[in-house]
Amino acid sequence: MVEISVCHYEAFSTIPGKGNPAGVVLEGEGLSEHQMLAVASRVGFNETAFVLPSDRADLRIRYFTPGHEVNLCGHATMATVSALAERGMIAPGRSFAVETKAGILPIRIERRSDGFLDMTMRQAEPRFVPFAGSRADLAKSIGLEESDLDDELPVVFGNTGIWTLIVPVKQLDAFPRMVPRNEWFPDILTEMPRASVHPICLQTFGSGADLHARHFSSPYSGTVEDPVTGTASGVMGAYYDAYIRPGGPLPLQLVVEQGQEIGRDGRVNVEIGEEGVSRSVRITGTAVFVKEWTLSI
Image (tube, rainbow, N blue to C red):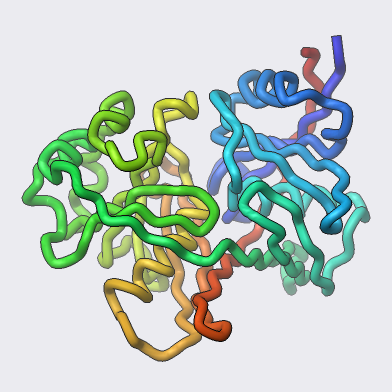
């Protein structure tokens, strides 16, 4: 048996019980992939992050759902950086590089006036692939009718580190009605059957937000809904830049709200910039410590 210490953080919120819970294992070195997956399954959060040494960056992070490893996870990154900073392992006011399976990504941390950290992470360059499946079947898979979908905006797979399907919805009042049938997703998302589904809307609950979303997990993940998704929020910003306001001035700054329907409200700040001929995607958020515990595997 191996004793593993797990830190529980809530990302994209400063209030325990809100935002998105993540597990953080600060001493991931020496754990096998099988052990990491076992820990993530026991923890039960949408993602658990494992900190490892890197010979290519300042540190390496691996991310596991209860069902499999993923290339990148925004909220677990925020949780991990908070855990490292609070323990004096990295210092606010500086930038550092993190090795992930989505590439080496720069992160900057700044101390806020309220004592919390703001963490800004650059994501991978955005990519989009058209969805060619049935819009009617897709709507039914999240408990809606095809008429609820916005017929002026495209449904596309988007990626800034991990693939998700962006589904524009006309009205905010459709979101509380959503009931996902995650097990249907692979048969509908034939181009990328392991992708998650991310409905978005231009109407919001909060006056300071620009976009609203929910996030329904791939059935292979072992979870149903991700409360507040950092990586998918980056995809939303890139989608806004490409399809909602194409050709607009940069940088584009947006606030994404998520989690209200399940009592987990959180917010993600997204910035789309321009670097040469490419678009840069950065998300900024915070995290709050909840507790630490030990489990045996």
